[in-house]
Image (cartoon, rainbow, N blue to C red; front, side, top):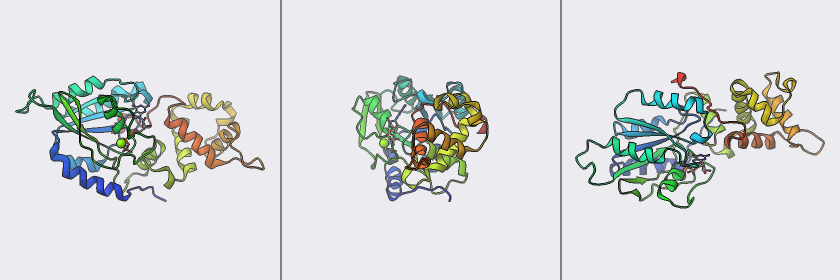
Length: 283
Ligand SMILES: Nc1nc2c(ncn2[C@@H]2O[C@H](COP(=O)(O)OP(=O)(O)OP(=O)(O)O)[C@@H](O)[C@H]2O)c(=O)[nH]1
Ligand SMILES: [Mg+2]
């Protein structure tokens, strides 16, 4: 069954975003640094048009450090109205650069230097839009949770500093994933409501990526002997992990739903290793 999640609150959110866009000078597009391509919402291009854009690769603390710089370059691609910065709303990495780049994008505006840059923060659900704003503004972790669809309304303008004000928005997805792999990656990383997913299928997809790209780390994390992982049957691997983690139902069979939750949590929280599910050459 194709993945799709576009609940009613997102329809309202898209309308609110369009209505409020004129309150902003630039857009801060937040991507998950582990899936910079799949977390780019094509609707955002249509909504913001040629407005100056700061692309933020958030959760850099969880992403593969060997690929982050490459992604930064690939996304910038010499476009003058686009700046890119890799940050972490957990560690605070590069947040001053975010403010500097937002100012830089507006350096030629008639009002530059006389008033704050006004930025609207956009992105798919759960990429850390609200967490970034909280960190920058020094607010407590209000309105931040590790599930998609937490922020429900476009916010008032929030003052970050004398040079930056931001508007928070609800995460939005688009109506149909042309490429099934895009939906799967968004699901693996928690941008799609888990309740609508077949968790086993998504966990298996996740395991497949780690099997292909981070095999050694996968073995280490789940204590897998080479013969336990030598086949490419990912369902069997899920069951093996289930037995090792004691995810069993009475009678001794593996509770695959439970182990799928475990695997997804471990992937999302970066407990296997820092990773990216896609490489910039795929752009
Ligand atoms: N490790 C890590 N976790 C982060 C980072 N940024 C956000 N998070 C976590 O990611 C989860 C989602 O953060 P939110 O700020 O609620 O995401 P959002 O984009 O506002 O989500 P919606 O409001 O649902 O669209 C929370 O558990 C945050 O603590 C980061 O840079 N690193
Ligand atoms: Mg939010």
